[in-house]
Amino acid sequence: MIEMSPKTNLLEENDYHYSLQDVEKPNLFRDLYSYVEIPKVAFNHRRVPMNMPTDIWITDTTFRDGQQSIEPYTVKQMVDLFTFMHRLGGPYGIIRQSEFFVYSEKDRRAIQECMDLGFKFPEITTWIRATKDDFKLIKDIGIKETGILVSCSDYHIFNKLGLNRKQALDQYLGTVAMAFEAGIVPRCHLEDITRADFYGFVVPFVNELSNMAKDAGMPVKIRACDTMGYGVPYSEVALPRSVAGIIYGLLHHCDIPSECLEWHGHNDFYKAVANASTAWLFGASAVNTTLLGIGERTGNVPLEAMVIEYASLRGSLDGMDPTVITEIGDYYRNEIGYDVPPMTPFVGRNINVTRAGVHADGMMKDQEIYNIFDTEKILNRKPSVLIGKASGLAGIAYWINDNYNLSGASKISKSDKLVTTMKEWIDAEYEGGRVTVLSNQELEAKVAELSGGKLVRGRKEAK
Image (cartoon, rainbow, N blue to C red; front, side, top):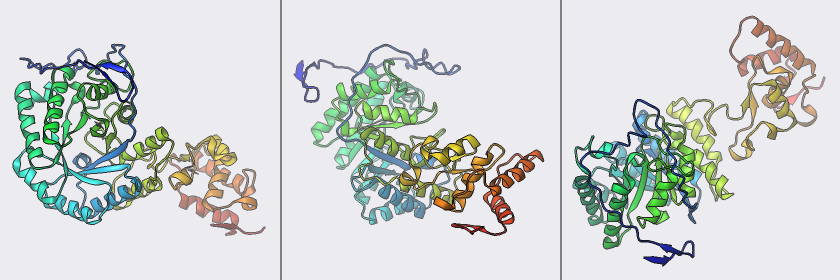
């Protein structure tokens, strides 16, 4: 059938009907995933059109997927982190939803306390098993949408569930029917989609879901789950690894609108953020994340990364407050006791800290030379330096000016006697076998000694 597309305003052929291919043996894509070799990326040179939705947003699974690889959060910690997400996401709900478990008394208390805050965003959603008792549980709480696991690769269908494709499809459709009967929007988590037979199982299954949704008069949401991080953002890559191809196929062949399409990725091959951005660019409105990217194995898409990525793609933060990212990092370190790697983008201690003297010299002349953006304005993080073997005169001068809040006429230069004397002392420390950077306390004690107490925080005594 040929129809006029409301998106492209072009006549487009729409005669694509894919039936379930109920194979006897699982298709494990051994040419791509041999298991004893690094997975291969195959190209078929087929391009799909970029299709950025009108609206894009971020969803969160910190309290579900993220909590599976960290010591469980307390109720207070979940409420605090949920509040941070509300503040970070801003009044327009760019951080749209947050997903919770419902099985323990603690999780249910956290849900209730977060609901009692009265925030419109993030909306609270859940993840449940496919049982009537679970549906009753979330309906009693007042949840309007829930995630349902519907594994779609033959690795899961045959090797984990012990089913064939037809049996799996029938079981999944029965589960989704329970959600519709309960008046709850089902969000179907297509687990392991980057190892699934896309046209032999995924498309026929999602088409059935789409038909059920029309009959129920309710939407069905699709979460495309790159469970093992196998997705790639490159163009012209063959399925099942092409993120763009997966999103295009769900939109074009399954009649799933962008606002009902979500990407959930993992970072096993360092591609989580790039894949999530690709999903946005090619038509998914939502990308699923966790705070600090904490999640199973190598983690999920970091929420804070997608806040910055959103602003990069849209040219605006649209009401989001990125200074909250710094508060979140501090909360994980100080309240949760989580060891945030210092080089972690946007939240690590060293994101705008330099050790090299030549870099510090550039920072003294113009912060923009060695700082990614105005971190003081955007993240409430002033750039700084650490003093070590390679700091040099410029690094020492920068540290003194920054640490003692010296500006204007009070600033000291790298030729100042205090700086050169400090450099002699630091060189002697490393010549004596030291290998670690000098702490602020050590440096402050030495500055006090060499300046005779004349240099104090915020001012410099007249000579």
